[in-house]
Image (tube, rainbow, N blue to C red; front, side, top):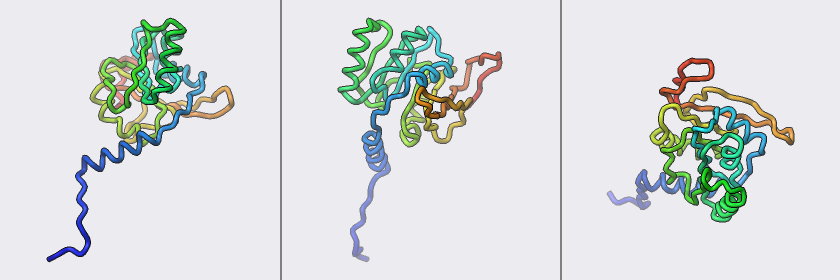
Length: 193
């Protein structure tokens, strides 16, 4: 039998690549308010022995804040070259080069294995595509804090409503990588990341 309409077969990998390309272009730079950035790091329990990764770091405020106020090492992942340059210049101006660095790459290509804390202010669809990368890269005890957009299919260990300086309400979602991390009340944290 001859088909009247041509068959269009697209391999699943091609569909995934097209979806990821559309998602990469969908994320615009929306800065996290300073007070909310601080609350994200507080919710994660960021300390001086942590390495904070901010995916889609924009102007670099979360990595810089993590280094200045929490004593962490920090890495910002930003694909926009102008924002990356701006962030790197701020680090140079603040003389934080030994504690903070920025990588001008796509979040889907980032090596997050050194991270103990990851911050996200990305759309849920992007967070969903990052699930397997985060799960495979992060070691037990690592924490992820997502601002406003959950990681689909993951159960947050904690949810917090917070208010910015401009009286805008945000929601923070804390996820923990199961394993050896012990919570502040002495209980073992076995939440699925």
